[in-house]
Length: 577
Image (cartoon, rainbow, N blue to C red; front, side, top):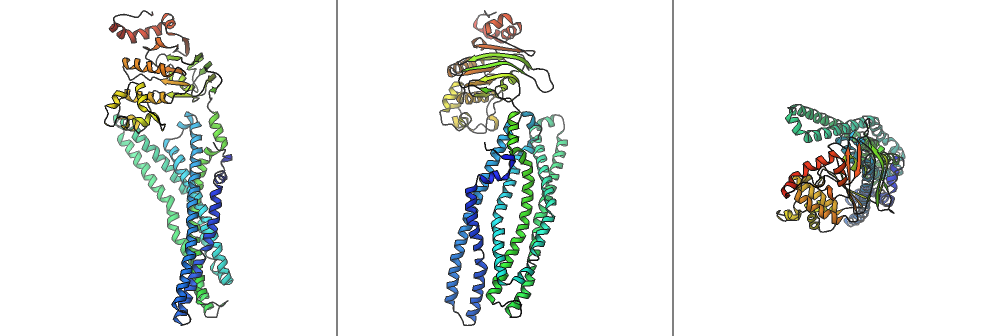
């Protein structure tokens, strides 16, 4: 991760300094070369006048025109180079900003993320970065396309008639002043538009995700009115945010071009030999062309002020997420487990956890797990199994110490499948044999019966599959990407016991060099566990299945209830009690 010191924009510009050098060279050449246009236009006009007067012939104009075309070709080639590298540098900045934002977001605690609406986060991470980078791109472009070329035009104007230049140049600054006067209005409009867009995103998400709930409780009409109100507010704010920029543009141009009246009057006198200096037709045409181009650039520069103002609003919104201090703070808000590469044992020492403002969910949890061991974790509903599993991800703050022998692979009780094919959901970009992974979870035969087999697309969240199929694909993915420690939260909840036994046998073979923590409310496999953690009323008992059957009535009763039918089918009861 890059160190974004104090969230300074210069940090991102430094990362693309090679592109900026090319932009600078090509931009200067292109924009100085732009003055060749008015000069050649003046010379061509004078040549035409001379041809009419019999002083020159068509061959002279043709030669001049060919030189003009060659010069313009070189100038436009420089324009192409400049624009290409401006786009490249803007894309790289966009990529780097979004990478820093993503890093900052994923390091924030779950509570912090839940404090903000989904719509607001979407606006910050996407729209604001894009608006900010677009402002940077426009500013970089206009430094050359407006700043450098205006200086070049101004130098040429002063060269022809400095008095007339001072007089005609009194008007473009008025356009600048008007734009500057409106910058607070533009900034406020952009801010209100962003806030309204965030609210609309949040309302839209809420309307979709909770549609069934609102329908059941007869609140559809109420939510529809709220959504329409947000949409109306968004439309009004969007128009208001853009109206000043778009409506004022022609006015800025008219104000800037007012100097043409002075040029027509005093420039005409120069041609007639009655003004401040002596001009021919070429000088008059060149001067007028230069000024009109300069005035047009002036009006666009006023528009640039608005774009920069809008970008500054977005920058202020995302800057707190881009500072090194923010990222460090985000990372430190969660207590991370420690990795100890030299040892192959998972060590949990006196770990306790509680949610803010509540009593401990569990206390003083201590156990060791070695390579090849599968640890069963169970207990009544809401005893804290899932929370304990998430502690190994460093997702929640806790007391005590956890030492890992390496990295962790986690499978939650929700499948979290992506809208892609079965193979893509398992491999996640890796190159390999997804059929092998499907065989581990006893699903290869089922997939072969599908029309497109392993390339079957499963829809968003695996909607085209049954719950058991979703869970097994998620487990196949976890096993394919297994690390030193595997956390499996209810991996067999949606499969029958026969399939459960087959998958567990494959799990035992695959994880001889791994440590597995298997969180489950189903106990049929627990006799095969290396250790069992029984969680109840905030306390955790670490033992093995046989001992718990003898010494823990709650565990023994739950096990008998779950396995009685299976044992009766086999023709015998439990001998473990």
